[in-house]
Length: 130
Image 1 (cartoon, rainbow, N blue to C red):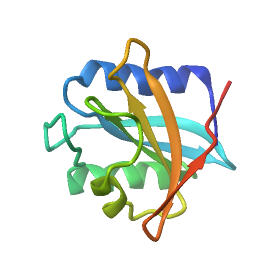
Image 2: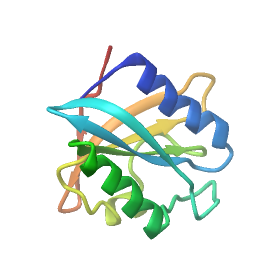
Image 3: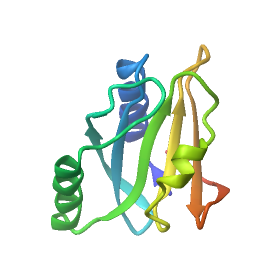
Image 4: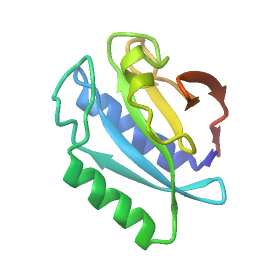
């Protein structure tokens, strides 16, 4: 997926603002290009996991669909570990066509990585910024 620097920066800023808790949200895309970052509230309010309230998730997904976009990615942050999907992340990966983007905020600089998660298998993916 290609993402503009401003959308990328918005996602990273969200992760930094929510620390020490994990942040979460969804990215709308068209033809493999990110068009909007939809911030969500981490209903779990936890540094160890994230959860998007069902009503909020539905509202975001309807907004994406109404805009003629696709669910390009689901993002969240890791505040205590590297930006690699945890077993919980893998178990809750219900959208095989979406990227899963993790913003690591444990170091001095944020580290952003993208993955596909299908049938419990994790594969590195590309997030092209610019």
